[in-house]
Length: 431
Ligand SMILES: NC(=O)c1ccc[n+]([C@@H]2O[C@H](COP(=O)([O-])OP(=O)(O)OC[C@H]3O[C@@H](n4cnc5c(N)ncnc54)[C@H](OP(=O)(O)O)[C@@H]3O)[C@@H](O)[C@H]2O)c1
Image 1 (cartoon, protein in one colour):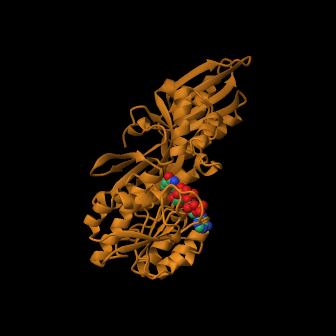
Image 2 (cartoon, helix red, strand yellow):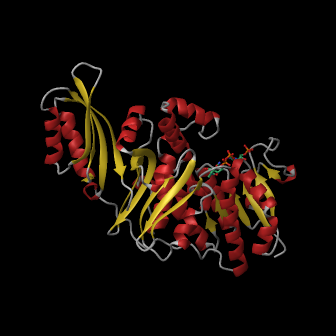
Image 3 (cartoon, protein in one colour):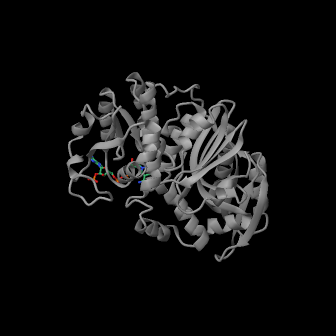
């Protein structure tokens, strides 16, 4: 091959990073693939926009077909975002026998299996390393690096915005709204932060991670989602007092081929490796039966970090082109999906209650727990400013989700309990 031509869909933060990585690392790319890589066309919304890279404006186009139908373009790099329109474009590209590299988790979490099967029918590669945890090569680590192992647990801090917010709230004692505004000003949070703070973005990434890690088609709808909007300064203070750190954790666990996948604010014991992942950083903790604990850490977003993942996928496609094996690396899931029932999901729980400050209340609360097979690991009671009210804060030993939900219902029915202020999952240090 004299050269390989790439068509970009999008030339924003990640697209510009891709151009820079290709330009700056051309020698290394040449060495690995044996020919130069050039960007032939880039689809954008506005041709005359000021961009982060100097590109010849003649390669910019507003017409998707200039990229998708160009017979000289071998590989499409999709870095424009959106779901439905992008799906249409990628279907068109794959039908033209073009390989695809995408950074789009929103698309892959919803249409991944459909697009991957279309790609392999057409002997095309469809790679999406950058869609989860930006610059961290986690998907390839799961699929190749840990191919010989049986992964039983993955825990991820896979959303930089929420990690930034929780870190600042914890370390600086600031409110959610205050830190969110700062994150928006710094460009760490979108103008509409709903998908990040509501947990949807992390859930999309966990659907992708658990599909690959457990070799089972996990849909977005299979992921239980709770965001961080209700986390308060008081919760974080109690967490600290008890030796925990609050993180938005994507949790995927397999036992006897049944799995649970969730995203929720979780209290981690301070000794857990994920408890020290701060600010906008991402990390994925993976437990394999043979390898034990591993952790992958790095920047989960940003133009250049994300572009390294995109361009590494490009190298993968180009190596496959040289070997003539495109479209052969996608493996269909080995297992049928089996989701755990609530009685099979076990965790420790943190709970804050507002109660009447009178004799016997703690005993009646305790009896609700013991009736439902749960006991306390830690408990404290503080008087509240409000007259004759107190706050009980406790952490349970392992209890099933089914029992915990029953406990909450029974507590809400107790006359002495005014309010269940907050509840969180608690995770310990080891698998
Ligand atoms: N940013 C990150 O750190 C990061 C990390 C991991 C994954 N990702 C994923 O990477 C993708 C791109 O993100 P980004 O941050 O680079 O986005 P971005 O800065 O908003 O860039 C999007 C680009 O796509 C173009 N575009 C958008 N909609 C279009 C349409 N309908 N028709 C033609 N062109 C269109 C825009 O054109 P104009 O420039 O003319 O407006 C722009 O060049 C997304 O799927 C995102 O989830 C991003």
